[in-house]
Amino acid sequence: MRLKFTKMHGLGNDFMVLDLVTQHFKMDEATVRKLADRNFGVGFDQMLIVEPPSSPDVDFTYRIFNADGSEVEQCGNGARCFARFVKDKRLTSKNEIKVSTSSGKITLHLQTNRDVTVDMGEPVLEPKDIPFVADDYSAEYSIEVDDQTLSIGAVSMGNPHGVLIVDSVETAPVELLGPKIESHPRFPQRVNVGFMEVVSRTEINLRVFERGAGETLACGTGACAAVVSGQLRGLLDPGVTVNLPGGSLFIEWSGEGYSVKMTGPATRVFEGQIYL
Image 1 (cartoon, rainbow, N blue to C red):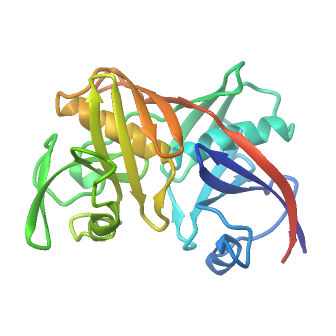
Image 2: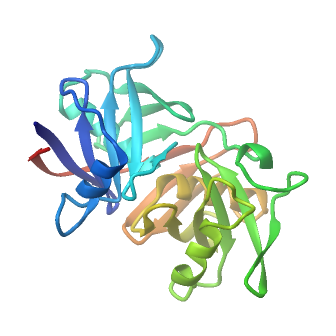
Image 3: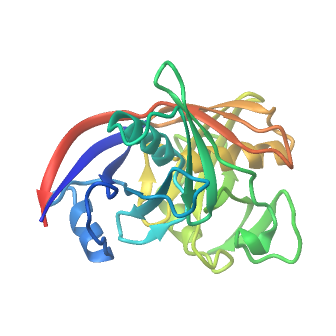
């Protein structure tokens, strides 16, 4: 069958976006992997799927697949692209869009300058809910990787994140430590790994090694998790500019009991169709 799609990116984190409201197709892991191939397929970090609402209090269901075919709970850069996609495709006329994900409901706000603000919900800090193996909550944990002990923050933004503080993102051992921490036994569902350089109390530089995708140019949930972890460690103020390789996001968090809000761009690259 012929499947129409849109290629989009959020700060270089790129997506194949599918409307499965007006089109009908059952996606599986093998097909995702085939389409994700950058030489023989469309190529993307994640596939985003728009489906009809799962309950009357939301407008759509939002599903995310990594390039390796695994389905994941949340993607912040994808959420911004999702909002721009459903509005541009006239699947909705709303500027405030409520969607359900496998980890809960989030709200997307389309701004007049075409940026999108995403209410990502409250961060999850309880270890068993992240999930992370630890007896009690702490702003920082020690984990063993090979022959070294690392200090890491553990936060879930609908998907699990481990946040390391580094002196410089340019020299951070992302390629070396990223895969090892991603599959560390204390993260039973694997983890996205953030390498955070604190520039000031209102600015950080960040690189993220995403589970199932490797290092990407930007990670929205990773930016949120890094800011939350930085605030809990007493290093950051509530409003922080996060500089990623693909560009910058603005993250706001007022502390425990409050939602994290992320603002940034979403860009359409091209429209396409593929026969499956």
